[in-house]
Image (cartoon, rainbow, N blue to C red):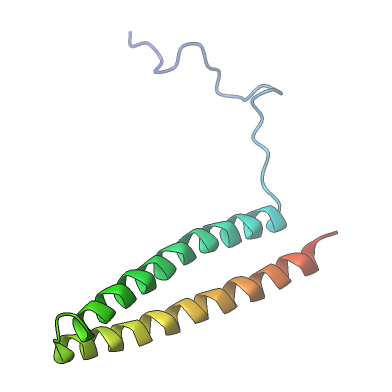
Length: 99
């Protein structure tokens, strides 16, 4: 006879183990937190791209590559701005859900 995979754990949770479902507001706040974490990376990318762009455009005198990085910066800024607005809008939704 095979032993149960978790011999000391019953199928039915005890009161101490009962799983509490998060509210819609808590789930929404979790998403806002995760979006804010994601927001960090575009900001860091913008800073790095800007530093490389300045070096390419100035010190290395490679305008073609600098122009390509400038286009990437524009796209990265657009993404960051849109993400920032989405976070702001979702925070307003969360505020409206607060009892």
